[in-house]
Length: 183
Ligand SMILES: CC(C)(COP(=O)(O)OP(=O)(O)OC[C@H]1O[C@@H](n2cnc3c(N)ncnc32)[C@H](O)[C@@H]1OP(=O)(O)O)[C@@H](O)C(=O)NCCC(=O)NCCS
Image (cartoon, rainbow, N blue to C red; front, side, top):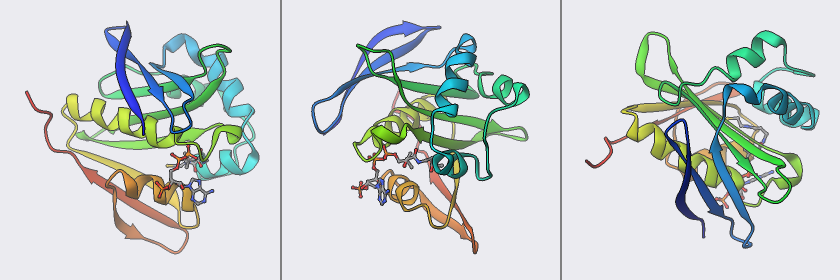
């Protein structure tokens, strides 16, 4: 069971405390523009396989341009949330969405969990918080793209209600329609 409770606020956005099924507590906070070095380090510490599955291409390291794009969050049209181990500050996972340039109510989603933390419910907890945030922001549909053999991502997305829109030989496009948040 995952418990989510609002905590502090950064840029008007709440921190949340997440309790994993094994009792481990994590903080989930909005990414900030100053997080570039920490984000670069977190991506560099992933296995080559996790980076490949996240970026859908071999990605030994992020370029300065990619890092600038990934830290360009406004917490509305572009949001990223970081799960942090509270006592060590270790980055455990990142989930994000960014609206499409010509479709402001439709956003693309990506999620990554540090290799040593995978299969503990972190991805599920992060995606759950992000989906609720997107709903509050008035986003109507979330899209995700994953490799067709990425069973972890497919199970994670299916469990949150994403449905397959297009299955190609190597990749799968999924989408989740979001009902408006209750007033
Ligand atoms: C995909 C990813 C984010 C999942 O994160 P996670 O924290 O391990 O996921 P969870 O522990 O919350 O598990 C979610 C579901 O996936 C399943 N799962 C997790 N890892 C799995 C694996 N290696 N093989 C099969 N199923 C797996 C879990 O059993 C769970 O399914 P269930 O709800 O039916 O029990 C993580 O594997 C990752 O970061 N991979 C590399 C980057 C990537 O692929 N990103 C996706 C791009 S959209």
